[in-house]
Length: 137
Ligand SMILES: Nc1ncnc2c1ncn2[C@@H]1O[C@H](COP(=O)(O)OP(=O)(O)OP(=O)(O)O)[C@@H](O)[C@H]1O
Ligand SMILES: [Mg+2]
Image: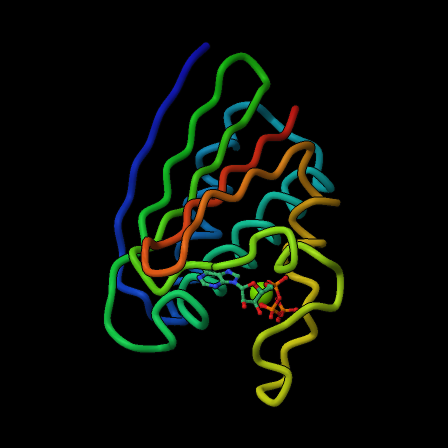
């Protein structure tokens, strides 16, 4: 079975929970394990939080989230049109954060990488950021 859903929402922290619930609802028909469900929700939260806090620096903007399933393979794509990342490989390093004073631990991408099967980051300074993750459910 194939399925697809696209949603666009304002970059605001309350919408992080909305995005988590949408992702959870989307995969529900596949009857995932509780662990897989929790992994997907956590990965979505991290990516959406990054879009809000880093991409738009808590200013106005929209975030899009696309979800696909093909059989039991889930793909999640989260996009912002924010400031972008000039050094993606550095940003992926565990404990690297550009905001050490605002209580960030620099573990978001590491969490996404470990909770999902694949993580792809497409970004350039000033060009926004697209994070694509896949997971076999
Ligand atoms: N959507 C984005 N737009 C711009 N920069 C980003 C985006 N996502 C991540 N970054 C950059 O990559 C760095 C690493 O992100 P990561 O999520 O791993 O850590 P963090 O957000 O700083 O801390 P934590 O997620 O642990 O709270 C960020 O500090 C930021 O500089
Ligand atoms: Mg983060």
